[in-house]
Length: 261
Image (cartoon, rainbow, N blue to C red; front, side):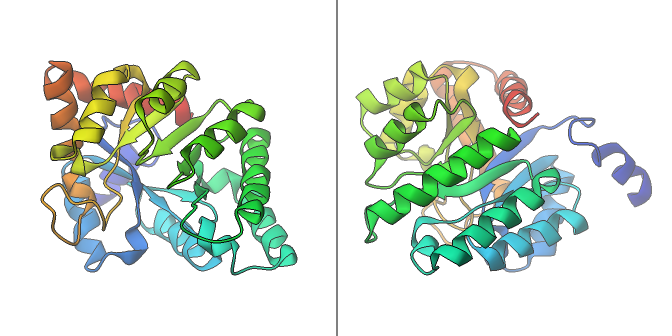
């Protein structure tokens, strides 16, 4: 198949058979990016690349213009919020809304109690969640050391399209996520992480997605991780759920389509 023909097949979002989907990667940090994406394309891996500030949001949008197998999620990471004044934050929110037709999600956004000024983080997080509801896009949520606070905000705003990225909360909070019908994206370090293995066991497969968080969270404790390794999340889910790998692929593809439509 020629390159031109291939683009015709994969340019629409859901018209080619997706074998694997990495819903959370930071492609802007990876080296040899063209080789990585070419290898992923050969393996039918779709990648949702995350922006975390104005600079990386623009980079991610450019990547989607260059590579059909890359989709964009743009947002404001908690510590990036703290670098901006109110006017700059409003401009970035407007930028995200302006590009609503060019993105599949708002992310990476959320709260992180490793950083100061939680009140400012919460204020901006709420604005971004409201924007996602307004433009009908899913959110990809960071919640380090602030899992309960994130859940309470999302419940208060009645947000429905939620992907909890690399969620590290306790069992009761995982059960609350399940009850809210939100999704958990399972990183590739599930290969050895007992906590993420427990999350897979607890969560219905219809609420699971897979991610690499490339270049972080390698399944083999190496750096860098790449989207090619997303298969490790699929394999561990198949093992825990006692399903064949191709069955897991089909279910997670349907989960993706349902959320990102």
